[in-house]
Image (tube, rainbow, N blue to C red; front, side):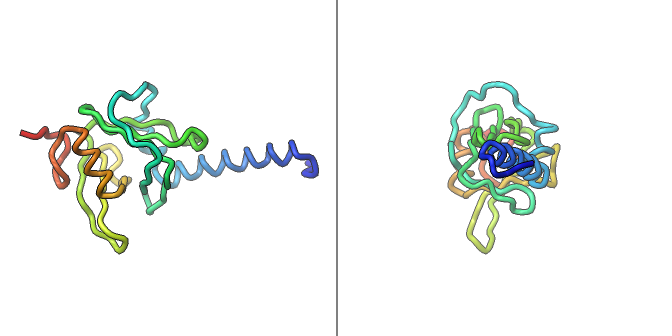
Length: 149
């Protein structure tokens, strides 16, 4: 292949990025979450765009997540340019637990999922609290399938 032509460079770059995004989805655990929680519909609820979070092995999704919450569940998607290997997700609250964690970098909220227990979602404590508030469920440290009294 002759890489002196711009269209070949562009095609090679797009192909490389597609493979890279697909691999990131596999390594981070997003594809495992998608196996159980893929969401092809349109989410209705409160959303926070351009958020950051971490999945398995602290693989970061910086400023490219849309995180949503409704009384039914948690919605996750990535910025449309990075969607290869990252379909939208919707996880019902009955499958989610949340805890406040402390690390070297400070405090954050960690969500765990019943169908994929080895894959956490870590977000800032502030965002995690917004998500829980929007869900109408109990605070961190409790199973989110239980409603507030």
